Image 1 (spheres, rainbow, N blue to C red):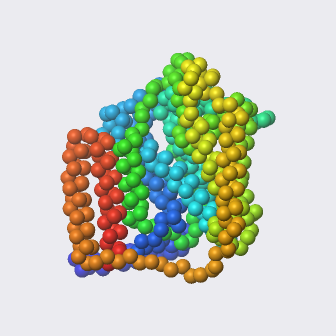
Image 2: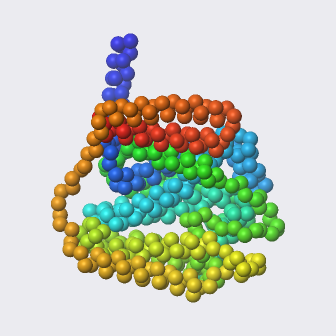
Image 3: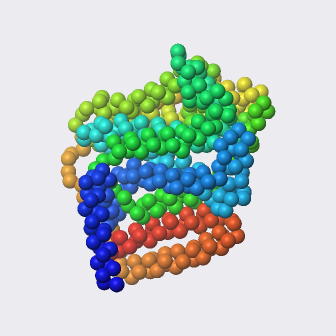
Length: 436
């Protein structure tokens, strides 16, 4: 046995010595021994969800058959007949929404903290591109079920591609193909291969040298995703049949702003490409415009006000995208949004939020430079032992309940209890760190 342990140690030392020269080991992972704010490593949390999506997506691929007559049927089989298919599909769907949300939070935290100023222009630009690709990856994914909601998204995508000046027909054919049969195969390829590979290549340029991987925080985020999947399960929707009338529906929340613009009746290229493009362009050029020395959002009133105005406008247009005219059943008027209403509220929200933030921050004195003080939380040994034991008992009980839920094929209960298990592990680990 001693010889075996010695041989294993020598093998590990050999592998680590050779990996020292690889790209992987040029990244240094930090595993914090004490609690640190997750805001600083939201990017790593986003990547963790990306890995979760890769695992669950690979499982779904085993049963999914892309095709105009098989896509919806195969998803129905996954959800209703495949072993734990309901669980895997809901995890995948909730994780895709969580990844988009985490990417947005990561973007705005880096923006307001001014971290792009520390010679991080390359990391910032690749991060913005990764954010756009994250939305495209989610967009191509939820279209693969080919239900009525997906048909709406496909129609919008085709119309936007076709509206591109000069290149419209060529772009539409290149992205969507010649019809529904081409579209499904192409989007399947984009979703499972093309976009993920591009994202992984960009991550090689985007990741900083030092990465924080906090196990309990990752566990907490994945646990929250599972709980959300249990509470808000994804719908199967109505199977789309070419030529059949389509009911009223709206796209996912991260695309509803674009949907609101299109419903104003403006030119499709202006509403669906130029306006969202201006939003993306603002973030792309920020590192080359905001050249001041101060990093804190408190000391950058103009750019802080600009960031808050963009959040206000994005939230407002997202809400408008879900609005339906309740006073008519005529499709055109039910979906139509008067341009003066949407853009009037956008201008008002943007100007007011910018003015209030700028005025408030301009009056305060610059923040003096001082070393940050880390506040450590300590709890008594008796209270720590009680909490740790209570959480361990809770985890053991959850394991028993989870096993029973799996055996009885209760998908939502499995998601809820597995999410609670991961969340309680996160809390347990945190209690251990602050009591050690």
